[in-house]
Length: 378
Ligand code: PLP
Image (cartoon, rainbow, N blue to C red; front, side, top):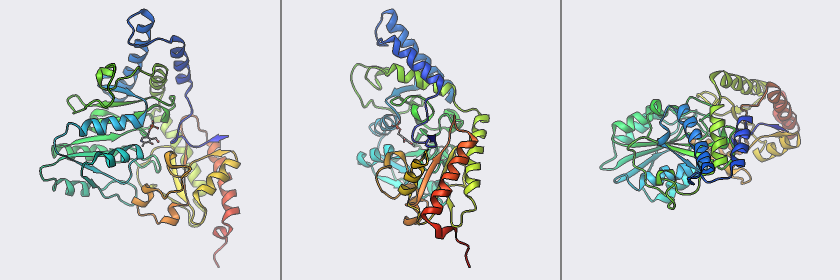
C-alpha cells in the first residue's frame, strides 16, 4: 500500500514508537508518589517541554487532552463559559470538531466570508468587528485546512480581534509539525493540537492557552492537568506525541514534501478540466485537493485503493458519508465538481516515487472512468 492520506492520520514515526513502548513498560500512574509514578510523571513533563519548545511557549500553559477534538472542545466551551456576552466569529472552513461545539453553544455566530482561494477575507473580518455592539468577539479559526491545506492569515486576524478587545482560538491540528507554529508570533489566545496528524499515536492531543486567557475546565474529577482536564494522563500517548513533535518537519523536510506534492500535481496538470483547489494560496507542504468533473470522489477513492494507493475524499471525519464538502462549497465550487474532489496528502515518510505511482494510478483510473475528458476537442 502506498499511503497518501497523512491529513487523516500520519504513520507513526519511529521516535514516537520507541517513546510509546518505553512508557507502556512503565505501567504506573503519574500522580503516584512512588518512584515508578515519578518516572511516569517525568515522561509526561518531558513531552510537555518538547511541545512547548516547538511552539515557543511555557510547558505550564499546555494541557494534555485525548486529541484534537477534545482540545478544540475545551478551548471553545471553556472560553465561552467565562467570556462576557460573547459573539463567535468563524468561517465555513472549520472542522466538525469545531463546528459542532459552536453550533451547540447557543452563542450568536457571524460567518466571515471566504475567498475563492480558500482563505478567510480579512476585510470582511474587519468590517464585522466594527459592528459588535456590546458583544465580546471570539474568533474561532483554523491555521491550516484539513481538506485543501490552505493556510489562514491567523496572525493578522488575531491582531484585529485583539485590538477590538476579543479573543482568538486557533485549531492548529493540521499545522503543527508541518509549519512553524509559534504561539507568540500568531498572537492567539488558544491553540489545539493532535498527536496523530504529525506522526504520534492516536488518542493524544493538547491545548495551549495564553496566560490569563479565560478557560473553565470541562471535565471534572481528580484535578490532573492543573484541574483543567481531570483524568489519568495517557502516558504512552503523551510520550509518543512529545517524541513526534520533537522529530517534526524542519524547513528542509517541508521543502522535500512540497516537492513531492508539486511533482504529483504536475503529472496531472495536463488533464483537460482538472481543478486543483487552494493552489493559488499558501498551503501545507503535502496536501493536494483536486477534482475532475464526472469522476466521483468516492469512485476515485475506491479505484485508487484497488491500485494500492490510500487517499481520501473530503475530510477523514466525513469519508464514508456522501456529503458535499462545506469547505469547497465555501470556496464557491459548484456541487457536482465538489463531489468529484479527492484529497491526496503526503508527509514525513513519503517519497517522490509515491507521487509518481499515485499519479499513474489516478490517470489510469480516470481514463477508464471518464474517457471523454481525455478526448481531443474537435
Ligand atoms: N481539527 C482538524 C483541522 C482536523 O483535521 C482534525 C482531524 O481530522 C481534528 C480537528 C480532530 O482531531 P482528532 O482526530 O485528534 O480528534
